[in-house]
Amino acid sequence: MSSRLDPIPYEEIIGFLNEKTGKNFKANAEESQKLIRARWKTGFRLVDFRKVIENMTVRWGKDPERSQYLRPITLFGTKFESYLNAEPTLSDRGLVSPATERNMAVFGNWLSRKEAEEGRGDDQNGFS
Image (cartoon, rainbow, N blue to C red; front, side):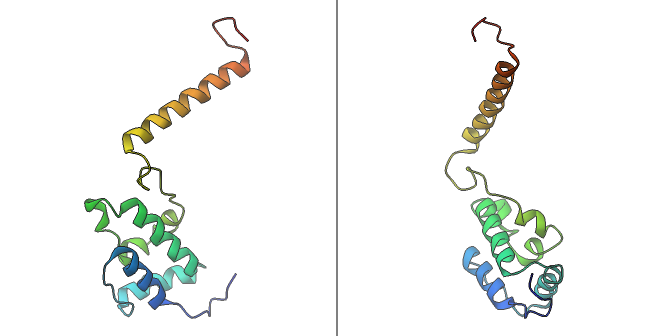
């Protein structure tokens, strides 16, 4: 892992956030630097900041209500690690509708139960 003495790339982090969101946050803003520095001290690096920005831009970017939270105070705060691990869903990516994604989940659960029943020999029809 990198040393804690690595220079913190505030410009690059905030620049990437601005690029992805179309906003104009300042890299020299004290509060933004404080949040970035806190995450940096715990071992997160540029790749992690970029992934958080990517993940949450995909998840929230098209939602007018949630897109307002694509800002340093939200993204780089105490939920940073949760955002880092928040994989965008198919509907977040615009590949399917939220309803289709819910239907896919229901079907997946049903299929898992059916496969488990068949594995136990619980087939009610007498077929194997």
